[in-house]
Image (cartoon, rainbow, N blue to C red; front, side, top):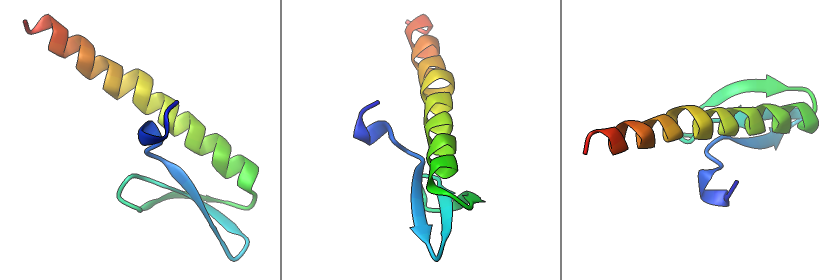
Length: 63
């Protein structure tokens, strides 16, 4: 996935790792970076395969 499509990302602070949405809001907090990164990857994949691809498919049928 390209960097511009990485809408959800991980920020670590004080031993906590937060998964943040594109606006910087915390989605969830994990104790370890591995779990937080895993959730960020899942959220980015869900966005790409669900919302983004669905939008493109709907747009192409409107023509």
